[in-house]
Image (spheres, each protein chain N blue to C red):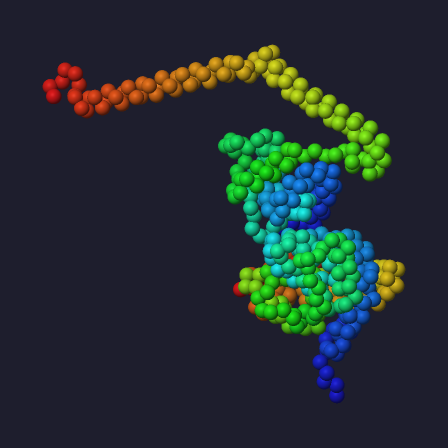
Length: 212
Length: 249
C-alpha cells in the first residue's frame, strides 16, 4: 500500500502538471471531455502503479484507486514514454499491453502529444506583457533549437552506424532484403500450390505410368 | 448515589447528555481557524491523509456521498467534483459554526448544485435507509458520544455494497514514535492552539480525545459488530492516523 511520501510526491507532481495545464486551454478542453474516466498505469520497470483521472479540466494522479478502471495499461516506463510520442496503430511488439477502452488511450495520447504550454501567458503573470513576450520568444527559440539538435543528432548517429561503422544495414539495403524475402515467400507459396495441385491430380488420375 | 451514565470527554468523565454540548463548545471556538490549525498541527499532512481517503472511496460520477463531520468541507469539495452534476454530496456536521464555515468556503470555490448541507448528529442520521454509495467520517468519530450507535446509523443509510470510510487518529505502531507524539500532543499542540486561536483548552481536549479513541483493532471490531463486512484498516504516518473501511452487505 502507499506510504505518505508517495502521496506527497504525487500531490506535488499533480500540482505542477495542473499549473502548466492552466496555460494550455486546448488540452484543458480535451481533458474536460474525458472527465471521470480512470486510466490505470502499471509501470513494470521501475514498479509503480499510477491512476490518472481527468477531473474538472485538470488531471488527478492517484497512487490507489479502489474502484472501476476504464483503461488499464501495463509496460515499462520506456515503452510507455515511447507510446506518448508515436501514433497507436498496433501495440504489437511495443512492450505495452492495454485492457479496456482503447479509444480513451488514443484520446489521452493525442492530448499528451499536443500539449502546448502558452509560456507567454504564464510568464506575463509574473513579469508583465513585454518582458513575458520576449522571454517566451527566447524559450520557443531555444526549445526549437534543442529539438533541431536532437533531430540532427539522431540522423548523424544513424549515418555513423550504417555508413562508417557498417554495423547496421542502411535503409535501401534493408528494403532490398525485405523485397527478396517477399519474393522468396511468393515463390514458396507458388511451389506449395503446385505440390498441392500435383497431389490432387495424383489422387484423381493416379501417377502417370502407374497401372491404375 | 449518582447513577447517571457517563462518557469520556478527553481525560474527564462527563454525563452522557453533556458530551455533545461540550464538544460543540470546542468546535465553536476553533471553527474560524480550524483549517489553519490543522495545517499547523499536522504540518500539512492531513491533506495527504484526506487524499488517500478520496482514493479509497471509489466514488464515481452519479454517486451519492455523505461526508459526516465534514466540517470545513475538504472532502466534500473533492467528492462534489467526482460525483458531477448527476451525483449528490451531503456535507453533514453537528456543529453549526463548522458547517457555516464549510458552506461559505465551498460556495466561494464554486461548488453548488450537487451539494446539500445538513446539521445533524451522526447517531441519528436523518436520511432514509439505503441512500448513500459512500459515507466518510474524517476526524469526527472520536467526538461522537455513542460510537456504536453512530456506526449502526451509518450502516442503515448506506446502500447495500456501499462503503464506509473512517479516517481517525489512532495508535502509533512504534514505541519511539508514540513517545515523540505524546510530547508533541500534550506540550506543543495546546501551546500552538493558544497562539493561533487563543484557546489552549480546546486543543488539549483534541489531544486527550485522540488518546481515548479506540485503537485500530478495536474500531475494526466495532465496525464488524455494527454489521459491516470486509472491514480492514490502513495505517498512515506510522499509525498516527488510520483509515478503516467497511462494506454494507
